[in-house]
Image 1: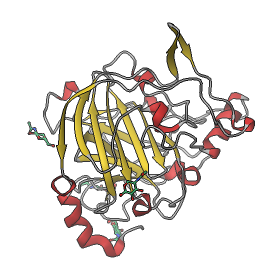
Image 2 (image 1 turned 120 degrees about the vertical axis):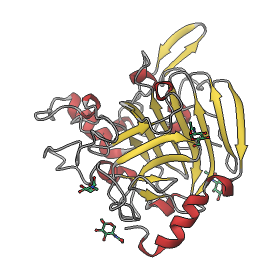
Image 3 (image 1 turned 90 degrees about the horizontal axis):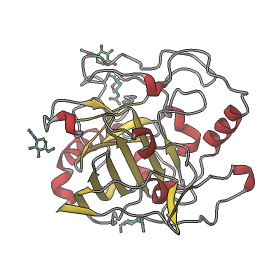
Length: 316
Ligand SMILES: *[C@@H]1O[C@H](CO)[C@@H](O)[C@H](O)[C@H]1NC(C)=O
Ligand SMILES: *[C@@H]1O[C@H](CO)[C@@H](O)[C@H](O)[C@H]1NC(C)=O
Ligand SMILES: *[C@@H]1O[C@H](CO)[C@@H](O)[C@H](O)[C@H]1NC(C)=O
Ligand SMILES: *[C@@H]1O[C@H](CO)[C@@H](O)[C@H](O)[C@H]1NC(C)=O
């Protein structure tokens, strides 16, 4: 199922922005691109990673998140991908909304309390696969997206730290992990993922964060294939109803495939050419090993307690 989900996902607004950027009608005039900003966690986190006011306005929420910001109205925009039971997704602050309509303002929804964010409500996650490879961490899963302010019929779109104005979607969104090798298994050492992509929609999601120490972080976390979803950007064998943590080999770079011994690069057609109904390749799902399977109740017990006490304020 997951291999086909959101294969035709479209993010109208970001595609249009990118097209106009290529036509040079949008230029970046102020500030440093989000993907060039580095902040240590927790001591170096600014109130807002993006203090600018540009074509798309100001950052919607904030990055400095703590116990005072932690409730179901939190506008925290600092996310984490740590482990099967410890990750966040980007989703709308108010709902129901589509990702395409709210991409610049998404907030962090996390599996656990403790970092000043919203918590993904109990029962929303229907199946999750966490994958650790030499170059990235990836979480893929199935979700009742209406529980995180998404419209039920949204086939979604892509969030990443780029965009036509280089301010990211969401603007100023930051992502950290204690799961990269340089963290040394120390659960308190968080490294900033400079390159990442998160596809949300069609009742599923994938969120890949690339190890900044790797030589190809920007390639594995490529952000230009925003219309072809998780199947092509994060090939996986996640199963609905199953909660699994694995180690795996690296994928091919999104958009790069081998046909008759030749390495080729796919060009995503512009939206003006209509729906993408066929692609010239099937992505390769890399081998995985050491998979551990858990029950949902074991994993998300903390979410259950949090949601019970804050459900009155859910969905902002
Ligand atoms: C907690 O977060 C809020 C909102 O970002 C910020 O104003 C406040 O200074 C933070 N408190 C501490 C102790 O960091
Ligand atoms: C959530 O926390 C913020 C920041 O402390 C506060 O302003 C807001 O009233 C809280 N909202 C709810 C619904 O508790
Ligand atoms: C880090 O957290 C994971 C679970 O999230 C746990 O299994 C592991 O033992 C922890 N490591 C340390 C060094 O505390
Ligand atoms: C995943 O399983 C749940 C529970 O059976 C189901 O409601 C949901 O539609 C499934 N999601 C997808 C994307 O197939």
